[in-house]
Amino acid sequence: MKRLAVIPSDPIAEYLKCGYSRKWLRDYYNPCRFFDEVYLLSPLEENAEDLLGMKVVHTLDIDLIKRIKDLGIDVVRAYGGNWACRFACEHKVKGVPVVVSVHDTNPAILYDSIKKADIVLCVAKAVEELVATKFKKPDRSWILPNRVDFEVMRPVPSGEWKDLDRQFPFKYKVLLVGRLNRQKNLDTLIKALKFLGKDYGVIAIGKGDDKVYRDLAIEQGVDQQYFLIDSVAHEELTKYYSWCDCMCTPSRWEGFGIVFIEALACEAVVVTSDIGPMNEFITNGENGLLVKDHENPQALANVIQKACTGTALRAHLKKNARTSVEPFERTKVDQLEAGYYQKILSMKEHHEI
Image (tube, rainbow, N blue to C red; front, top):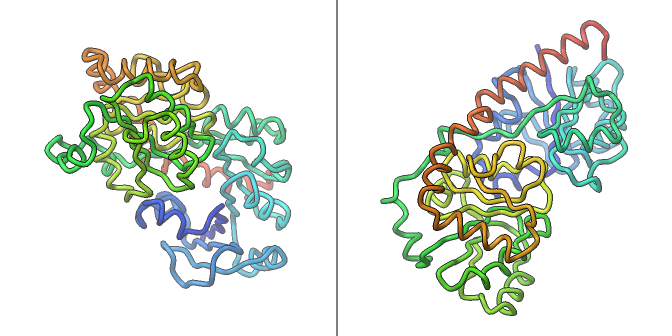
């Protein structure tokens, strides 16, 4: 009987609100059904007998060690290098490995507690480089990328876009997907509209305070070209990815950026910043376009224009898009993660952890 304890960084309800399906989350927390039992131990959740195949036990800091012992947990998995990492690493039980996954290159949310982890799973090389500044066990820092469900994320036929064409009647539609915060660099994209002209419209999908961006659009004189959609069901994103003339999320930093591999799986033309980790899986001119000066509205506009109007280039990018992200296909990454768990249990058995 193999038992896993998971500590997500946010309440499960937040992931569901963001559009992730129950099936996707169930598979995510127990890849390949590797564990016989999965417990969610968190101060952010209330007790529940079954939540996405997990038994939820409301757990405070003072309770965690006892919970791990009483439930016979074999592995503890914390998601994120901040509070969940600290929660797990500061309350370790001897002989029970603590695995922390790190998903962001922002050093402010990588806590010193990561030093006490047994294994660190990094979503990209750029994240691994940050982790190495605190976690000094390179042989126990492993790459585990984000995953994309090819059964869900696939090109949608043009006949299913008519409602979006009526709603956003621009010649060129530019899509940004991500939370409304400084990281996603929506402000530069809005400023780029001045250089792109009236044929272009920006549609942003994401939660957050829109006022600063709405005010910026008014200030720039492009408020009739900027639209916000608060949230879209995860499965519905396929239609938006397939419909837009380019998916442009010019992030200032990312841990991995699942929206990029989802868009590529839908054969979208992707424009993003020439930074890690995006330039680890996007090759400029082959499966997407990268912007070096991504905080320069004119530079960003120039690349967006090329992405939207370059007929031969678009055909080339679309042809390569889906195959380029096959290494991130969900079942492959699930198998990789399950293999890591098997390795961890073997290390535990041989007292290497």
